[in-house]
Image (cartoon, rainbow, N blue to C red; front, side, top):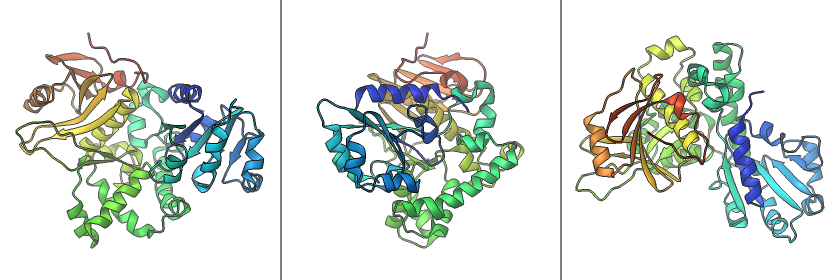
Length: 386
C-alpha cells in the first residue's frame, strides 16, 4: 500500500476542527483505504453503504448511530442522502459523543441536501489521486502516464494499467452514474467525454461541442457540470482584472486525471504519448493538478486576454498572488506573455513549472521551478523563493 501522509494529515486536521468531515473524491481514488486507517472496516463504527449488511444495520439510522462513540465512518454516503438531516442532529449534541467522517463520490453541489442540512458543521476534504510526493519524485513519468488512481498506477504493466482505465470509464458511466440518480445515456456521455479530451487544457467552446453532438448548448453545459460534479473534470474559472483589455470570459476545462485523459485519447504507453499532438496539453493538465494539490490555494483561476496574453493558474494564497505557467521544456524562458501577466495582474511571484531538475531565476519575481520540487510542498506552508 502506498503511504499518503499529506492526505492523512489533512483528514486529521479537519477532524480536530469539525464535527462532520466529508472526504470527497472520484471512485477508486483511495478514500476507503484512508478511512480504514482511522476506523477498521470490522468495527461497529464503520458503515459501507455498498454492503448489504451495513445497509440493513442502518434500516433504523437514528437507533444505529445515536449510541456510537468516537469516530464514525459512513462510506458511499451519496447512496443515502436521507442521513444528512440526522447527522445534523447528532452533530449538534453537547457534549459531543461522536464525530463523523463521511465518504462520497459526488461534490456537495450534487449532494445539495448535505450542504443545506450540515451548513456550518461540515468541512470538506477533497481527495484526488495519488500525489507525486506519495509515489516518489523519481516516478513522475509513470504517474503522468498512468494517472493517480491507485489500481491504475500500481498495475503490473502499462498495458494492464491502460485496460484498467478503459474498464473504469465503462463501469463509471454504466453503473456509478446511475447510482447517483443520473439517467443520461452512457453512450452519449462517453462521446462527450471523448470529445472533451481533445479540448483538454483549452477554453470551453460549448457551441462547437453542441454542434458535434447535435444537441443544444445548455445540454452540453449540463454534461460539463455533471462530470465536474463527480470529479472527472476540472473547470477553471477565468479571472477578470480591471484592465482596458478584452479578457477571456469562458472557463478552461481539464480532464483531472492524466491517466484517464490518455485512455480517452487511446494512448496506451509512453512511446505513443511522446508522439501524440496533445502531449503538451497533457503535461499542462498534470502539472496544474500537482500544483493545486501541493499549494492548496484559497482560490484558483486562469487568466487570458483576446490579445494573446495568458496565465495557466492565478492562485490567491495567504494574501499573495502567485502565477503559475506550466511548460514542458528543457529550459523555459521568460516570454512577453509572462511579462504582461506579471504587470497587469500585479503578481507577487510567477513560477514557471517544468520537468527539469533545478530551480533558476528568469527575471524579477520569476522563477523556473521543477515540478518535483513543487510537489514536495506541504499544504498550509509558505512557498519561499530566495
